[in-house]
Structures are given as C-alpha cells and as structure tokens.
Length: 572
Image 1 (cartoon, helix red, strand yellow):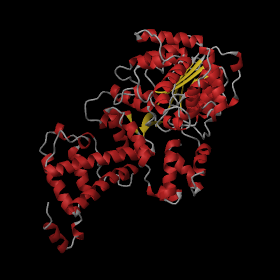
Image 2 (tube, one colour):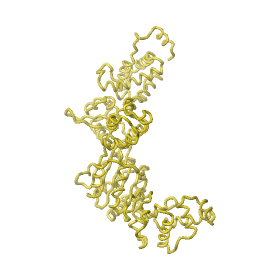
Image 3 (tube, helix red, strand yellow):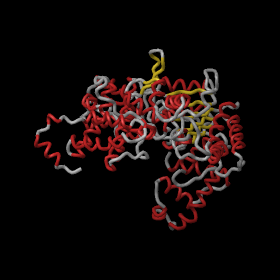
C-alpha cells in the first residue's frame, strides 16, 4: 500500500470520526512516517519547523489515531493499526470503506496471507515463517479438531526445537478465516494472569483503556462471555514458562496457578472458540480432560520423518546421502537440532556426514544450549534417574532404580519422577521381557554423560586439592557409581560407556600431574582417608575411587628406571 492509498484511507477514517479532513501538517507527518523519515527530515522537506511537528502536531495526531483505532498508535505501527481497524468486525465503517484495497490485506506486517476482511488478527510476537515443509499429518489433525470438531482446548506439546511454535503459526495462518478474531501470544515474559487477561480483553474491546474487575475469576468469566459472543482462535506459546522449574512436570509457578483455572474453564465451559496451548510440558490435570469424544485434545509433536528431514539437508550442500538416515535417527528428526548440525558439518567437515559421524560428538553449540535449558528445569530426583540411565547405558527397570538410589526415596516418588520424565519426553520406555524398562536416546545420553564427567572431575580435583573428602562438596561420587570395575564385563556396551568417563578423567589427571603414576599416587592418598569415613558418609565414593584406581593402575614394568627417577623428582 503506497502513500496515496494510505492517505486516502486515513483521511476517510479520521473524517468518519471527527467530521474533518487531515490538516497539511498531519499530511506532512503521515508522508514522512510512510517514508521512514525522522522529524528532522520531515521539517527539511516541508515548510514546518521540527519542534512544531515533533512536539505539537505529532503527539496530537498519534493520540487522535490511538483514540480512533482504540490502541496505541505511533509512526512505526500506524499502517498495521490501520489494517486492523479496517478488518475489525467490531467497527462500523462507512460504505466507501467496505472494500479496502487488496494491498492493505497483504501488508507484510499483517502476516495475513489473504485473511478475510471480517477477521481481526493480532499476531503479537509470532515469528515470521518464510519456509515450512512437512507436518501434513499433524497439521490435518489439528485443523480437524479446531475447525471441524470445534474443540475448545488443544494442547500441542513436544521437546525443545521440535517445531511446535512454527506449526502453531502456520496453523493459525491457514485457518484464521474461520474465526472473527485470532490472537497469537507468547508467554516467554511470564505476564501475570491479571495483566494477560487485560491484554486479551483489549483485543475484544479494541481499546487500551477498559474497565475490568479486580477479581481474576470475574475477569476469566468476562473472557468466557466474549468467547461465546465471538468465534475466536487463541494460541498461547511457551506455556512452560509459567510452570515451575526444578519441580515435576506440569506444576505452576507460585502466583501463576490461576492460569490453570483459565484453561480449565475454557476447556469445560460452553463457548464457540478454541484455545491452543503450545508447551514443552503438559499442564497438570489436562490429561483427565483429553479424549477422542472430548472437546479437549492433545498432540505430542514427533520429530520429522525421513522425507521431511531430508528437505532440510538438501540446501546445506551435505554429501554422503546414504548416511543422512543415520544422522536423522541420532537426532530423532528434531528440526532445530538438524538445522544446527547441518552448517557445522558443512563448515567443519566439508559437508561429509560420514566424517562427522566418525567423531561421535553429537552435543555441541546450540544443541548443548537447548539441552541445558531442558536439563536445568528438572528436579533433583529426575536428574538422579537420568544419571543412572546414562551410567548403565542400557534399559533400566524400576526395580533396578530402587536398588541403585541411595538417598531415602519411595517407589511412588520414583514412579512420579519417571512419569514426569516421560511427559517431558526425555526418556523412552521399552515393554520387553515382561517388565517396563527406561532408556535415554543417544544425544541425551551423550549430554548426561558429559554432565557426569564434569561433576566427577570437579569433585575429584577438589579432594586432590585438600587431600581429603569434603562431605558438603561431594555429591555425584557419593550418590552414583560413576566408575564401574573395568574387570567386570569389559566388553559390554555399558562397560565401554562407563570407561569413557574414567578414561576422560584419567587423561585429565595424567596431564595435570605430568604422569599417570603420579596421579595414581595422589588419588591413593585421598582414597586412604575415605576408608576412615562412616559408611553413610561414603555412599558410592569409596567404590568409585577403587574402580578409578583400577583404571589408572600404572604398568610399572613399562617404566624405565630413568622414568621412575624423573617421577620421584616431580613436585606434588
């Protein structure tokens, strides 16, 4: 929409409300805003002084438009505000404005994709999605639930990077014509429920200044009434932000419990609208509402299938197409992880996927940051379980976990934590051999193993520094058997995985003390002090030291006499 069309429409809107046309100074400001000018540039290209335009006419003009459009308007958003005003089903327009130019409806900032004139859309912080591929099955399921079956609540969940936000935006863009109002809103900033309800009601009232009751329950009731009056599609992205981190999945943060009541009432009370909740964690109590014949549905978004994932690689210049399947399986079709790993393969391995796979390093950069974010949200028992799954590097049953965990914990607590990890989609379960077993997928296995290695190294170095164990600073070595006896099942997969932690530590200590023998002696000194501790204080610490010393046992026969003499002269 060019300036002349904008001027014509704006003049009609102002005249309809004030019965006067735009003044020459207002036209000057409108033209400058269309061209992206500063007030100084507007003054240079007109007969008016900058202070007059900036401090007198400008503020009055934007205030006038704000009152007409019933939202805050400035020279940076006036076109989008004008478009929303013209499309609003709540605004009575004069006959000459009933068919606005097509260009207005395709304004790039509206993200409309050709929305009907009767639909009002507020995209909030919705990202622009220039490229979208796949997800046909999931898209059709969601669209059917929302449009055909008129579900009141749909929960779209999945791990970080799986594509939930992207799918929610594209879904809203495609089905928006079925609604009077579409609101897409991110909860990343964790707004209070009172402020959030105010924002929602402003969309219905089309005014920044509205009178709402102080009581949150009454505000929710008013919102429900609007959802009955108008057919509205609301998409709330990042719901996990208002859920409590370091607690079991699905519990609300203190002060945010009313959000749970909001979606509960939207799910249970009659109205003609739909709320789509996009989240990494499914809120508590939602599972009880979900059903095939219920107005509440839930979709756990899986990874991309192989055909869809290959589309991401085609533009990256990767070779070894016969290895793409293996790479896709390692990252479980997670689109963000695949997008992060593809440029790294191109830049660091000349696009050779086979060379990257040989390195067996799958957690780095943005992928590690993504996993850090998910891992830090876990409660202590959830982390403890993941550590044991990584240590065993094979499926583990509930009975085994009960045996491994030393600190006081009941079976019910373990079951609750396992259920929470399954809800977060951080573990998988295998129903083989007559019992359910739990396992980590490959990328998370490597990440948790790295966490274990880092913690173990830090604790051992701390003990080597003080030459004695400090019960307040020893956690992972006390609670988990990080190092297994290398002489037990040395060829098993679990032994190889566990050896990798011990070998990493052995290499680090050998480098620190110049020789493996010197490092061994220092560890032995600390080990002797551990033996004097009470069993409850030791936990797995003594056995960890025994097994680490077994891995680091120096081969004296391979040391020349000169080498031994050189070791004796090394400082501690």
